[in-house]
Length: 92
Image 1 (cartoon, rainbow, N blue to C red):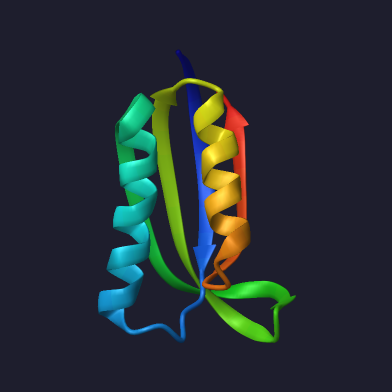
Image 2 (spheres, rainbow, N blue to C red):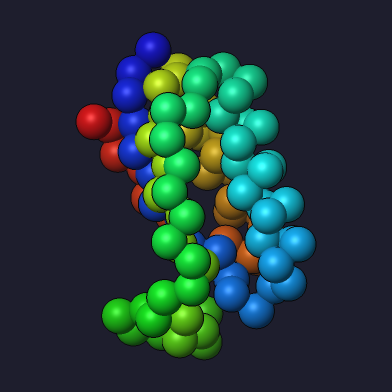
């Protein structure tokens, strides 16, 4: 098990309820093969440059400990959905 940190930017045009669902989906994927250490919701913030024609994004920073395969699962899940503007995971 390795420690990871991820930043996820969710489409801010979604309703608050949908954003919470997206966050819960990410939590479930991580908790299948690891454990979450810390979740920090930054909320809506201005983007440095437009992404998918959006000027704002809903930021989420998550620290977790898991297998390397979790990163692949998260990437697959986020690439399928259009509600995630960007994501990045790094090993701490």
